[in-house]
Image 1 (cartoon, rainbow, N blue to C red):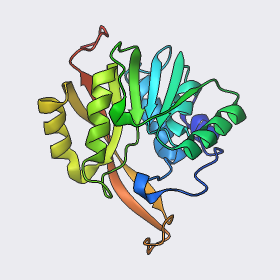
Image 2 (tube, rainbow, N blue to C red):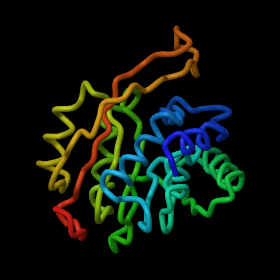
Image 3 (cartoon, helix red, strand yellow):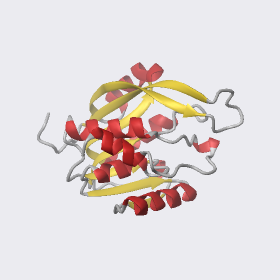
Image 4 (tube, helix red, strand yellow):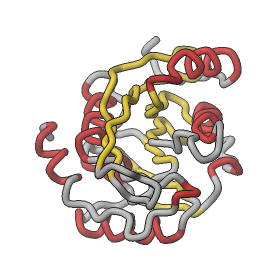
Length: 213
């Protein structure tokens, strides 16, 4: 599947009806989502025929992109029941099989490591400091091959240092810098849209089972 086709399909997905600020629910736009998954597959081979988990899946955009690119199995995890309902609807609309689990990522116990790749757009931590790092810590415990995650560019040094020193990462690489369009969703937003510079990271856990180094 070509990048433009993937972005077009993701652009048709339903998004949050009533986003919850306490969960930092911002939709992952089709532009960023398509490039994240397209890069993961075409540059590193981390999607097709892999078991992919979408952490904090929201409306399912990243997970469904993985399914469109030929993932063997995709599981979306989210704490919010309403988001999962929307994600189910989006999966039906695209006629894709994707499983969903309602849970708090911080309490996830997947010790058998059946997940190859984790993809996620975690909370940036603007409402709860360190929320993005909690997601990253768990992702690096359960992924056997790679973790792809979006984080604010301003946190780049902290992300790399912490991932390598404390979170079981063998490598931490910024694949590219992207512009995250934050729409005017909440009352405190003064502008219709704000561009936030974000890094697309690829982390490889120390327990990587893949042949690639």
